[in-house]
Length: 252
Image 1 (cartoon, one colour):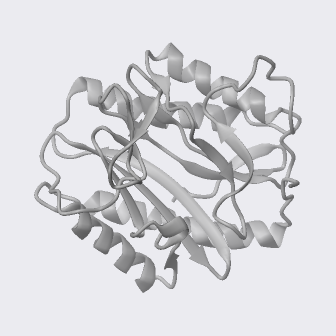
Image 2: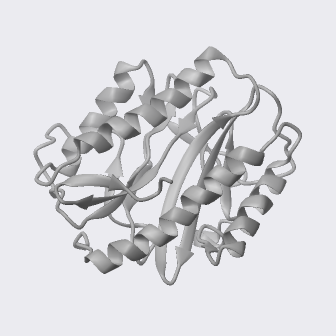
């Protein structure tokens, strides 16, 4: 399937849904406190999205039960909200999708609850900083595999490792479209595969593990952890390639 080239009006529609993603993440970041349950956090996110004329895109997607992925501590991605209460020293990944008028937005952050350890802050900084550094380097003509190599090397240079088996993706009229964009190089040649072009819209999402990138899925059939059992971090933005550079759509 070909990678979509979006018209300016289509990118404007994607701006709308991604703006609400960014607003919802900021809302949650502002109001989450120790003692709140993951279900309460999810409810707060869903209610905010509905109140602003959006639809929580993850709710029901492939059978996922909630509108917010709440990935606590060792859970890298796809954490299912439950009655677990966050406490001081935890780190929490929040991944949100929004659909408005048939167009999708998607972004994620990892936040500290209260005072967190230096190591956990380094984890969070890695996923965030690697994301922004990669976005700055995007330009038309670059191959997506070159972008994945940039992500991989940046993660490894910070002493961490990317989660294997999961990836960033295209986005538009569906929440997940072509291409797949891992945070690690598949094969040995980054000069292969499709090239980035003006008008493409896609999500980059560094998923950071400490020692092993091998993924395991917990009994809830959703929550993804590293086999090392250590804490992890995840950041994501939706970007559009406009006028020969990447512009972040999912940022206030």
